[in-house]
Amino acid sequence: MIVDGKKITKDILKQVRAEVGQLSRTPVVRAIVLAPSAATESYLRIKERRAREAGMHLELVRMENDATTEDLIAKIQLPGADSVIVQLPLPPGIDTKRVLEAIPLEKDADVLSVAAHDLFEKAYPGALLPPVLAAVKQILEHAKVNPNGKKVIVIGNGWLVGAPSAAWFRQVGAEVTVLTLGASDLGLLKNADIIVSGAGSPGLIRPEMLSSGVVLIDAGTSESGGSIVGDADPACAHIASVFTPVPGGVGPVAVACLFRNVAILAQRAGLQTAPKAV
Image (cartoon, rainbow, N blue to C red; front, side, top):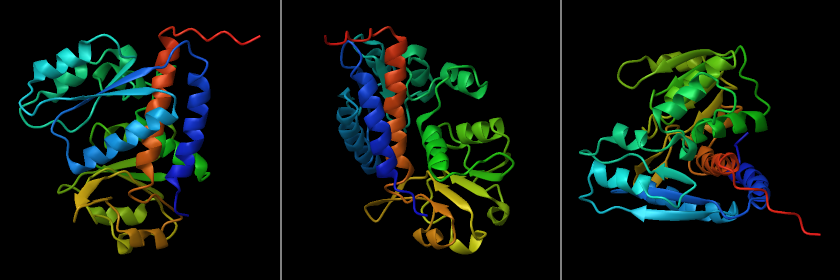
């Protein structure tokens, strides 16, 4: 089964738009961008389209290449936005941790700050799921895959994919192993029931590394030959029972889940429900 991320995305955004339509005004999402790559630009175009489909306004703030950490923090702190997202990665010379910590908890739809991340990791009631993880969860539900008791391998331990994925799979009762590039044996992939990869290494996972019927969630993106590619060789789709292509798999679903988080935060912020017509 090759997952159709666009179909799942459409269903999520339809629901989000209905919820946003009950708010007193259009939520504003501020996206701060510095030194974007081709992959980043691709995601930004997707986010702009999906924001409109979700009934929201994406305020794109492009920073000059010589912008400082303080410049980014100043943009985050400006009033007028219901949620603030910072497009990662940020270039060398920027203190990414300080920038992300400047995002107020009540506006952190991307779950990038330590405060938001801690609430999620502690399974605090009402805690938002990081969007990529929310997409993984949505895809598993769509494919009717229950991770409880499964052997799960997560490749990478980054803030966006690896760390939250490992934490969530443990929360739901999976047996989790985290592998990192250059320090782990990828031969262990043969033992996995579910693999989630966020390494950002083109062609890292090849068909001969996998057991038949594995669930392969490719959340890694990078550039190769001018195209956006994932961590898994596309031929892995012939081995896996569930396979997410890149592009078109996890990425668009994660964007939809981001805007679902925005809608939740807007509701919590007190945007009153619009009065019903009589």
